[in-house]
Length: 293
Image 1 (cartoon, one colour):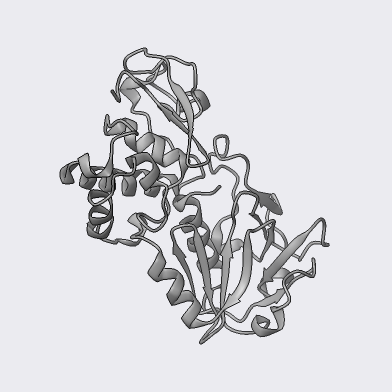
Image 2 (cartoon, helix red, strand yellow):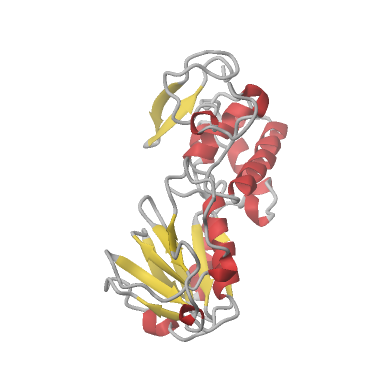
């Protein structure tokens, strides 16, 4: 599932491409039936909160998109392509699609760990986007959008303060690893960031929230903001420090981007202990028993 860095990246790109302009919208697949509510209207702004996108077309016309596990965008320049596959929604700039296509007419993101941002179309050159496989793609009223915001925790990428997160964690006996994945505690953190934040803090994922010191939580919050912001450059989240990687110079190799995430059975880069994995709250948890004792 895309984490906050990717959602905010989409928001920035789509805002550059479409905000302030009247855009065309349709739903070729047939499952998005509210295109007439938005088609031809000016897009005021694109909002990102945690793992949610909101395209503001005016009062009670907010297109809500949650990508879920399968959702993804394809983007391109030049003429609108023929519909292929189950396209839930298309959005395009009527003037821009008349321009010649840029080299590499369309781009769909690769798997997060191999997409370094190379070859992506400059956001100001984007003429159209296609959305496939989202968990949700519906038009929200203002009240629905505000209800969503109230149930989400603070978002490190929106300049929010960590106080609400700290208060919830410090009152709970749940494991810190479970709490960091709770979007009502902190919005935008997913499985990758969760695992890497806890390693970088040298904190056991099984520590109860009540036992985590406030200064540690503030440090984790600051680190989350930095890692997510860096991850907006491309889809990859690179959490390892050069001094800890087997190859300390040059491009970060795929297998060296993370300390523990998806490294079950491999030696920790720092202490050599075998990285472990177990299920927690329905998701795989990775940690180093040595560094995170």
